[in-house]
Structures are given as C-alpha cells and as structure tokens.
View 1: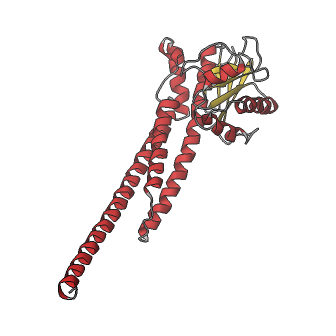
View 2: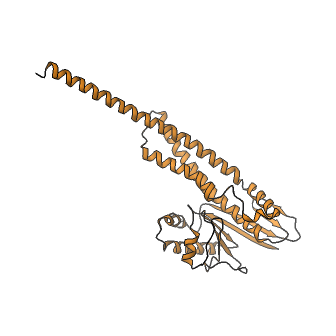
View 3: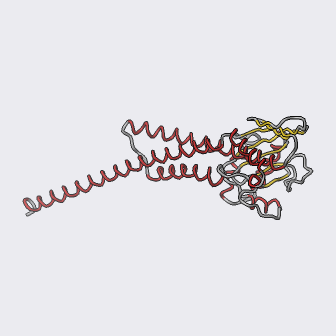
Length: 285
C-alpha cells in the first residue's frame, strides 16, 4: 500500500512560471495550463524517483506531495528568496503572502491511497485506487489548488460585501459621500473576482488528460463535484453581479447628486446676474 499526501496553499494573484523558471535556471517554457513540478529541496525539476515534490500553478496555487511541515516551510522560504531577487512589481504581492509562512491561511489537505486489495473510492478528504496513475494524482493536485484559490477569492468577496454593507447603512441614514475614485476602485475589485475565477483559476476548464481518458474524466468530475468547484464559482459570479448592481446604484446616485449641485450653482449664478442687472439699472447710475 502506498500513500500520497497532498497539501495545497494559495498565494495572492498569478505566478509567472516562465520568469521563475529563468531565475531557477530551468530551460523550458510553461504553457498557461501547465504547472511547474519541482523538488522542494533543490528547486530543480522533479525527477521520477523523487519522494517529495511541489506543483506550482500560474494562478497562485501550490501543492506539496508527501512533504513534512519542515520541508514545506523551507521550500516556501526558498521560494521567497528567489522571488525577492525579482524586481517586477507584480511579484510583490507574493512576497507579502509568503511572509506569513510557514502556515498560509488558505490550505487544503487530501490523501491518495494505492491499495490493490481495496475497491476504488473517493471521499471529501481521501481517495483509494487499486493502482497508481500519475494523471489521477495530477488531477487531485489540480482540483485542490483550484479549491484553495477559490477560497481566497471567496474571502475577498465577503470582505467587499461587508464594505458595501457599511455603505448601504450610511445611505439609509442619508449619507452619500463616495468619490468617483473609490467607486471605480470598488468596481475594479469586483470585476477582478469574475476575471480571476474564470481566466486564472480555470474553474470551468478540465485537465488535458481528461479529454482522452474516460477514467480520468470521471475521476475529475467526481472530485470536482466533491469540492463543489462549479457551485462555488457560480456563487462568486452571483455575488460579483450583485455587487456590481449595488455599485451601479451608488454611481447613479453620486452622478445625480453632482447634477443637482451643478443645477443649483447655475440657478445661483443666474439669480446673481439678475440681481446685478437690476442693481445697475436702478442704483448703478
């Protein structure tokens, strides 16, 4: 019997694997759907005989295979040092996330058991298979990496909901002090939720191995249903659309308030001109 322990973490934003590969001295190009598989100790491409390894996904997911907490901590510290040597601004968010190590807030654990005498089974926290297949292990890593990435977005969506709730309470008290810059930033964040969940995390996309392997396809559908990837994505999408509707209302109210102020300014200026004209006519001489 063999056991594969998978531990997934999520860091903020996307991870440029090709830039990281250049920094690590890896001479190859990674496609957008292809993870980087490394030895977590040497940071070299993982060899077939390695007992431990780590998958890095461009959408900010990290999955460790059979790694102790000490190896995970040392690997993340090593990645932080490599990332620190990059000067690109878009990598700063990863450094902020990695400073929280060795335990990241978004974590998922899953176990794959290979037992020839056992019947195939898949549960919320483990799977049992009679024989080892690399593509099934990669599917597990892919799914739990998506799951922790979605968890990160879900937390951010809830935080924005709380912020909007405060704004709505203020509106109920007749307070509407929302600069256009804040509204634009809020709309950008909300649109980012939708874009990231579709384009970066690939919630609606299946691994390449599932197209030619019926067993892999069934396995992926089963485990993705267990982690509720599609319903969670739909929930994020629904919340994002609701938030956009709310920001649209605030934007319309803000524009209406400015229009009303402009109209009053025009009325005051016209009244001032009339008063000045009357003054000139009757008392100006």
